[in-house]
Length: 245
Picture 1 (tube, rainbow, N blue to C red):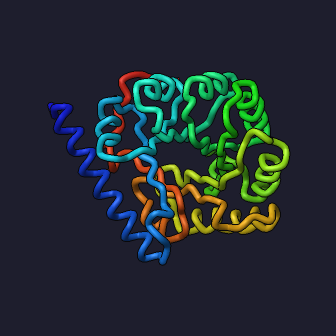
Picture 2: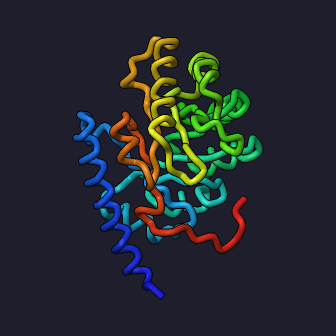
């Protein structure tokens, strides 16, 4: 069995490798490497492992489950920038926002109801406005959350104009079932950004594209991603000791 220290050292080395690949992909696409954020997705991984990456200088981490993020966040420094990535039930909104004061971005607004619930709870808790991304289903799979591309403008407008405690910050897509995406998925999200920015009279450089994961983040960056979500390439395979809620 691999000792925790060996695993942690490997994670730091893997993060550095990912950051180098991000830099090279950005340079190939003609964009500045500092325009691309790497969210280290730490689901199922222990706080000790996250802390190693924090101590190595990384600050941006992502989680998929409310239970995990509310357990981990208080054990780590307040300057961690947490991203929540995944479907959120309405009855968990207070738990998430109340339990993670340093939640920086909610990446998966996929309908008006969740936007309204987040907006109200940010106000109730007296938090600073929360940055959010609208999740778009670019693959057309029914199993995937996300608004249809034809409705992305309407949802983005709702967030920007009707949710004063939310900051519309861009668009997100998860991609295909095997967690890889085709250029078409990424192009669809890029097209959505053009439509949204035109409708909202917003400069495209102010509208983030969160696309790309462990299997395809370099392609995503080359196609304009500003936010990649990398988990297993940094942390190793997921560990599921029990069913998550």
